[in-house]
Image 1 (tube, rainbow, N blue to C red):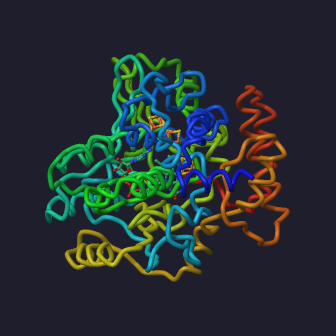
Image 2: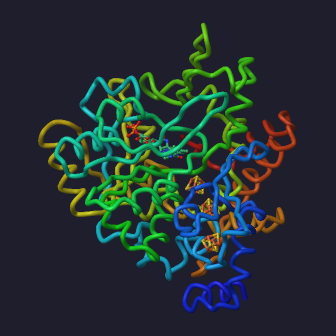
Image 3: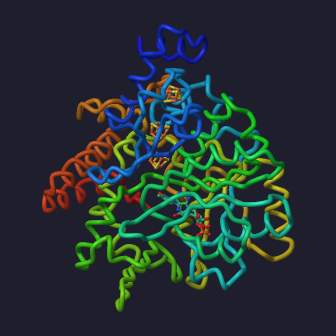
Length: 438
Ligand SMILES: Cc1cc2nc3c(=O)[nH]c(=O)nc-3n(C[C@H](O)[C@H](O)[C@H](O)COP(=O)(O)OP(=O)(O)OC[C@H]3O[C@@H](n4cnc5c(N)ncnc54)[C@H](O)[C@@H]3O)c2cc1C
Ligand code: SF4
Ligand code: SF4
Ligand code: SF4
């Protein structure tokens, strides 16, 4: 029934359904399915959408100015929160056996050879080295990366830059929401030939893909998409709780780096006259990530299907205590660039088979999605619209793992920290050693 309605909206744009569409984009927020990506803001030609930071749930979400809205429905069409983008064939080509929308799918692990980057980068510095190369070789005119600033509160936003030093300074993962896709409005509006590389999470890339189904101009502007692996974005509540532990309030911050200072990374919290350094795994624990956005618990694109290259943490590959990245290459152009970087000794990479990658990483894309949907329903959670159905056998272990993830999130909201700890320990047993890895 719901899928029929979605198909009508997408295929025929029936005018009578437009009122429903406006209700539904607000429904995405009401149903707690919004990822805060910002794509709806960018597509709205009437400038009726504003993305606000909701301090109650610690995430970004849209509000609509009803006086400006003409009920065109574009915001819903581009919304990755509303649909399960991996299963909806109307929004993409086919998903291949590796869970990627790509002609090729080659796996590597590797790291940068630029030692200066190790102060800032998340893991192996592949993303930052790649961005430097794209700028230096004039493959793109500028890159779109994430930025964090402090002005009484934490502000995160996309940044456009062609300055390699700035790119280095902005490297490292932001384990909090960033509405990256608000940038699409600006770059599509600019009447020039500028070409960009874009770094973002799987839901950001899905938003770009859905946006490009309506406005193809974006494909001429963003020519390389660099996706990060992702199993969840902790809300700002996670950060606030953490700061509270160190008796720091958000408005005192003058710097906050979630990850940098070597492998596997440290957090830096700076206020006037004081700096605190916390080891990555001392704060990125169940207490932190159980405060992920609700939509993350029902997301099935951990390796970023819609990017040209996806990069993640190769946690179990270390040489001389250097961090390494997983790299999935999905475009022939990017394949050429990566091998040129290898030839020039800018990065070091080693190819592995798909099977080796999955064995070492612990799971494939689309991990336990059917089980997550069942558990979400059990917790009376709304689900994104689902296209193709998957008929694989349900795994009891994955079902229990999904159950305890949900329970963790519910307990963390209610501040039941002791119960949360117990629930998490049980969850670890069912995850079979596969840990939530930033
Ligand atoms: C919220 C989040 C969850 C993640 N979850 C996983 C995971 O479960 N498993 C895994 O293997 N890897 C995960 N990663 C990816 C991992 O943290 C590293 O970003 C990745 O391995 C690349 O490392 P690097 O050293 O090449 O990155 P760097 O060279 O440090 O570059 C990182 C780039 O990412 C951009 N960036 C940082 N944060 C964000 C953000 N929130 N949104 C958009 N762009 C951003 C920065 O601007 C920078 O350009 C996650 C990243 C984020 C931000
Ligand atoms: S329905 Fe159209 S006009 Fe209204 S908010 Fe969405 S995109 Fe903007
Ligand atoms: S497009 Fe993004 S920000 Fe807008 S409602 Fe959907 S998920 Fe939320
Ligand atoms: S898990 Fe990552 S990609 Fe999926 S909705 Fe959450 S933040 Fe977006």
